[in-house]
Length: 253
Length: 253
Image 1 (cartoon, rainbow over the protein chains, first blue to last red):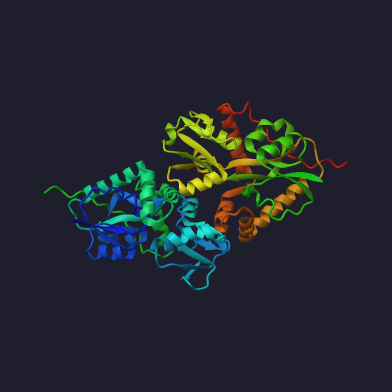
Image 2 (cartoon, rainbow over the protein chains, first blue to last red; image 1 turned 180 degrees about the vertical axis):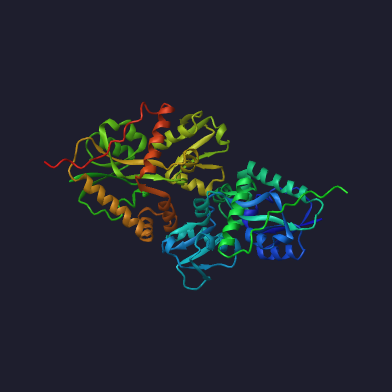
């Protein structure tokens, strides 16, 4: 049975909405799943874009799924009283590798310091970002929106990766994950209600959040991912831009 | 003394933030102010874009101020379970003339019915739109975002209009209104805190809302306004697209 990684974040809800597949679920935070994937303890998991790129020689990705946004994503915010172009220090959370590199790409001049230290800007992700955007009047810069303004492309935060060895059933599992997203898109209210019960946010709020996310790994998302990896390389966060190597159906024996 | 119309909506807060001008304020809802302006009881007031166009032969507008957004505005939402392209009936509020015409422009096939009647979609504006977006999981389409996707331009919801007769001091008053917006932009946190006390929304929420609004009536906003008026004419909501006639400084006697 395929061992499928599942991150506990609410952005995963559409992919697992009505997943019709026999799998063994491995639930964890992203760093746990990255480790498990690279250690061979997991057969397929969502992995942050930059972490995928750093380990691309040992991984393959699903051709039809990603987690991205075209424009504002709400859950990644750079909070600062200093105008964007003058920010020289950013306090960053270690929680999200891709967001930290995205900050580096968008503000290459700014030095990063650990969260808690004095800085002109603070990078917030997830719940902390959403809460802050609602409560704190300090200017917030949505990194999904800044990325779109800079590149004209969607931002891809995560891809689905598997170890390099061919594994029977992976393409069928991808088909089942895609079908789950499709059904979630067709039943947005039921998805929002169920996710609201499970994750505790208001249903309307979650529906708006899911509307902003992109799960289809189309041509524009691929261009967005490659552009991000190129710019990450340019600021020294990646040695080289890897080729995107996809999982292909195993040859029939 | 100039009689200046003031709409009680929170989107006016930056324009009145630190207005340094001797004026007589006339506070009212938009339809009241439209009437007062056309009846000569008011010398300058914000007026909805379509209402201005319908009375353009009797009005002049300020060249540097508007109320617009580039993309999502949050406070104008079309709520519907039916996919956008299949919507055939929309229940509309009589509160906002421009939003109703914008809906007509974006969905020319859909018939409008009064709010309360059965319809496939509902147009919500202002508080009702914001509240609904947070609470209701039904799909919401932000009309500012749809407009940007359709035209690539900002949407202008209101302009500042004065009766056609030259009035001394109008350009100075415009300068004072522009200066107030500029100061509000420089002190976003104080603006948000003060507006939060006055209007009762959370400060962070208001700061995000003000970040989305555009008050400068620049070349792209003018193109957006003219495009809106052209499309409004095309769907039969306007007889002709008026020339934009601006207030000019009165000749020195």
